[in-house]
Image (cartoon, rainbow, N blue to C red; front, top):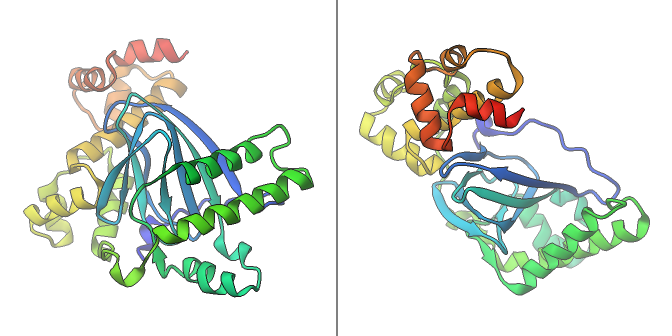
Length: 284
């Protein structure tokens, strides 16, 4: 696995050992909802409104309302907006915390925790969606799972979900090969230098790839082209600066990697439907 993609932010669990987040995002089509990354925990992304393009280890698929995307331990994944508004629940947990010494746990959960099983397709169906909605209700309730009844109920529901998910897993040996470490270095480099002048030709030469292969592999890995990826990162940063700083639009453009302020404004308006100045007024 490529360390450059690993998410290092620690997760603080409650007494039920499950972390829950709700996300509601207004995005332009193709914008990044969450960057390609991996971690040791398992992550369930349940979409309730809109559509998310889920990218994982060279594959991509659309996840719409009522559908679930699963990322197992050590499995790279990222998400991009397809609809103007995307709402989804994220449930995270360390599989090892749910080992209980039973034969079933040893047979199924240990192989999942060890990364021997991986998930590459969206999961849809009334049984799974019903269980997810029940779990979300317990985790997002008034007590947020802090009382013993709701905490134990959440744990029990998670076991039911895992029982359903196992049939969607496949052995690691049959999964597609993850990107090589060299490409991991490229993506890490881009994530840290996207405000600089970057091009497929320059990066291909810098990291020892043919440009055609570089462009094809980059799209396979991220789900979008190199220029779209860099633009998405720059626009995310632009939104942050417009919301949090007093910089003039021209300064924001320069800080985001656009020496031409007029071009930046045109790109921003093309994506969001309004100018940077209008965006700043709306968000304040």
